[in-house]
Image (cartoon, rainbow, N blue to C red; front, side, top):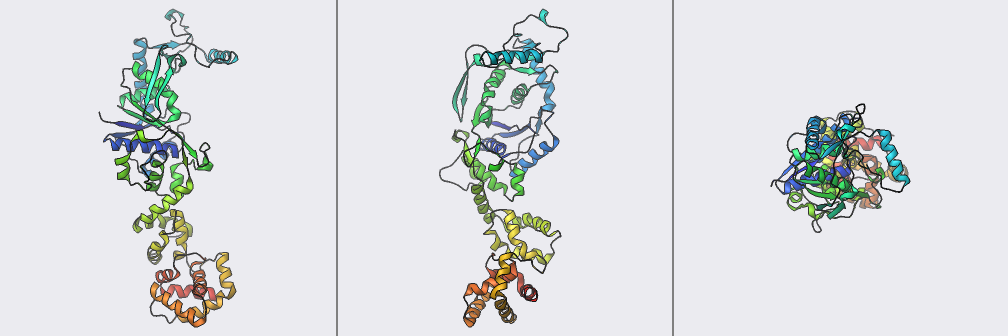
Length: 467
């Protein structure tokens, strides 16, 4: 049997973190078993489904790196097949017309609540004769669910789960306007798409009992279910925006790398020993859905950020340049020229070791490409306002004669200069850093000076001394 999984989002919003993890688990299990990973857009809720949300979901999956097999299936395009399935159920006596009006259903629910009963359809049209059908009411169609026995799901994550069939009422398959319901559409599409494994959040577990009954009624093969626990915030509370319940595009815009997000989401509920850094090839080789735990996992933005820092350090300078240059140009409001790009790429090895996100990287790199005169933060101004200005003046005069403008050569110069002036090395380096970077934080200042070059470095010193 070829394993076929599917990710089936409803396009009523972005691809959120929980959905991305569900898609990842479906993708990895399909690839681990040599199967197929399909994508179905469940857009039957026409009032809430939007093209913008569809585009966001597709782009989110592409960005995070989860390519699907075959064409995208849009559920609304299959409505005729959904209705044809209902016709087969009606002909087989496994579905029936229900002529309850909305007012009758409301009264039914209120009566049940008043008597302390479970709110459910009472089956009043289940076995009525056709002669009782009122001609002036458009009926819905309900599934004639089994009333005796139990429905059992052997869930790969939750274990065996059982419900008494007497607890399940006859769900609506077609509304009175002829539109298929979500429950019907999901089942028919899963059968037609040959889905063998349904991996989704455990908030869908209750739906599975009804769906499995409908699958059997339509003659479909029972899929293997795996209902994975939901993601909570770092404090154990239900996931919300303050915990990081955002769309994956928000993490892209915050400067996270897709491979870091994949690695982090993989470890939410699944693990492989003590391994923290897991490559895509290892993930495919090691992942098995039965190894996912039952307890909710906790999403911690700080841990994701630290992991992202690892991936930035491992990423090629070429790719980091491609990601960072547009951010720098946006901050400056102009395109970088060849000299500015060269400075950035020259300084990148020293910058990437400190950065946790691409946004961090662009912020820390700004001083390399900012036009003169360089803006100063408060701490840099304070360094230069004290005795730093005098030190900078003396250092500039000495550096004007320096022949070896390499990081090692400049480091040696600074030590000699400190000895000659009776200053500590840090006391020499801080005014240089403030003048060159506009802040008191940077990579090695001698590395910075080498990257900027003698002409640019001295020009920045003189800008400060002239101000």
